Amino acid sequence: MKLSLKTTLACALAGVYTAPLHAAGLAIEVEIPRIQVAEYHRPYVAVWLQSADRQTVRDIAVWYDYKMPKEEGKKWLKDLRQWWRMSGRSQDQLADGVTGATQAAGKHTIQVAATHPALADLPAGDYEVIVEASREKGGREVLRLPLAWPQAATVDAQGESELGRIQATVTP
Image 1 (tube, rainbow, N blue to C red):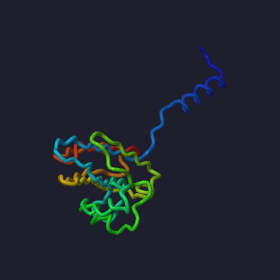
Image 2: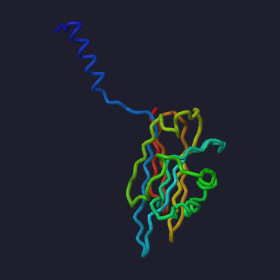
Image 3: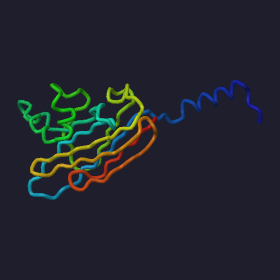
Image 4: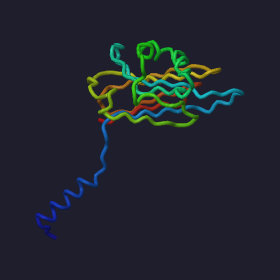
């Protein structure tokens, strides 16, 4: 069966438009475990990207109780000790698009497009995705996931108390 040039071109174009599109960027899955205690408070969580030499720090997400009256929730951000030292204390206002509410137990995915300010002009190199969680009347935990930007890869780590499984996937 011989197809005309017009039919071949139409089929080729249809294939282009129906092919799945994969957006470049970073996907981070954060699992918050269900903890059985008498008084449970959702954890504050900070997720950031840091270069191996700690010179480049990009905030990806900060989950805290930002709806508290008179911004009282901000005073507890200091409990995210490593994030606070690296980034938080130098900010007058948390970056728009980074702040979010505390999350319930379960799996939560953060999608960061390559055009997002955290990744837009990020030079190629070795980095760590750092996830820190702190809970009132609970514990604190930090997990580090090494990755080479912008090489395609999936890395994961398993928390022991305040965090469950954390997975970071780079798609070039």
